[in-house]
Length: 417
Image 1 (cartoon, rainbow, N blue to C red):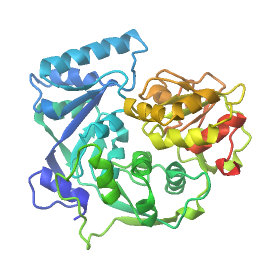
Image 2 (spheres, rainbow, N blue to C red):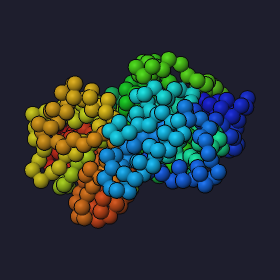
Image 3 (cartoon, helix red, strand yellow):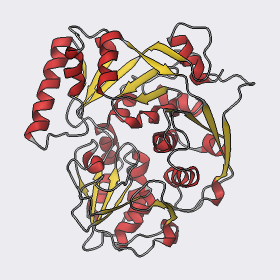
Image 4 (cartoon, rainbow, N blue to C red):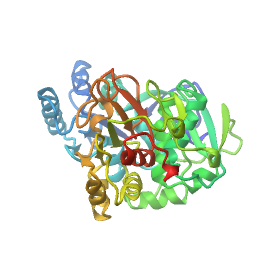
C-alpha cells in the first residue's frame, strides 16, 4: 500500500484498503473557515446538538478578516457564539492568518493525520505527510456530528523532480506552474499527487508546501511528500516529534502514473489570464503593463517568499502607477519578517501591507481589481473575476517574478536581474 492508503486504512480501523474503495475514517483535525457559516446551519439542520470532537475542531477567520461587510461581521459573530456554546477552544480569530498556515504553526498537523478543511487548498498539508483535503459545508457538518467522514481511496500518481540546481529567479511556484501547464487541470481528478525525487529533497519545506498546495489545480483530492529529516526538523519547531500513523509506502506499490521533470530546465513561469493551466514563460510576457501586484496567500505569503521579494526590492522603488500589496500568510510570518527587516525593506520600496489572511485572493477585500486593470498575483487561481472585476486580467507568478515586476511596473523576468 501507499502511505496515503495506510493512513486511511488505520483511521478506518482496517488492515488494508485498495484504490476505489469507500471507507469511513476518523478525522483528526476539522477546520471551518469564515466563508462557511453554512456548516453551523447544516449541523443543526441535520439534528446536531453537540459537536462530537470539539477538541479536534477548529475555526479560522481568514477569508473575510477583518470583516469588510456587515454580513461578514454577522457571520463571525455567529461562529464565535457557536464555538463558545460547543466548547471549541481553537478559534483563530482576526489577524492570525490563513487556515493551512496557522494549523501548521500551532502544532495541530502531524504526519499520518487526516485533516479536513472547508478549503480546497488543504492539499498543502501533504508536504508534511498528511492526508489533507477540502470539503463543502454539508460534509463538514457531518464531521462535526460524527467525528468521521467517508472517503474514496484515491489512486496515486507520482511526479519525480530531478536535476538542478534551479535556474536564476526560479522558485517552486514556477515548477508547479510548468507541471500544471503540461498536465492540465484535469490530470489528477480525485487522485493523490505525490512529489518525490532529488530536487524535492533539496527544497525547503516552505517550497514543498507550494507544490502540494497547487496540486488541487490539477484536480487532486490530496497530495503527498514523504517526510524526511527536513520535515522533522521543521515540525520540531511546532512541537511535533512523531507521526500518528504509518507514513511509509511499500516498495512494491504500483503508481497509477509516473511523470518526470528536470527542474534545471524550468524557467520563470506564468499562468496567463483565464486559467491556471494557461502556461507561458515570463520572458514571453515581458513588458505587459501591470496595475497591481499581490504577494501573499497560502501559496506565496510565507517567510521565504517575503525574504525573496525583499532581496529583489532592497534599495529599489515600486514603479509609479503600480501598486504592490503584501499580505503575510500569518501573524507569526509577519513578526518573523519584521524581525528580519523584510517588512521595513518592502515598505521603503513602496509596498502596502495588510492583515494576515487571504485578502484579495478570492476577490473579497484588501486589494481587488477594477475593470480593465491587470494584476500579478502569487496566489493560485486566475479565472475571470477571481480577484475582482471579471473585466480585469490576472497573471499567476512566483514571488520573485512579482517583486521584479514591481520595479519596472511591467511583467519582468527575475532572471534578468
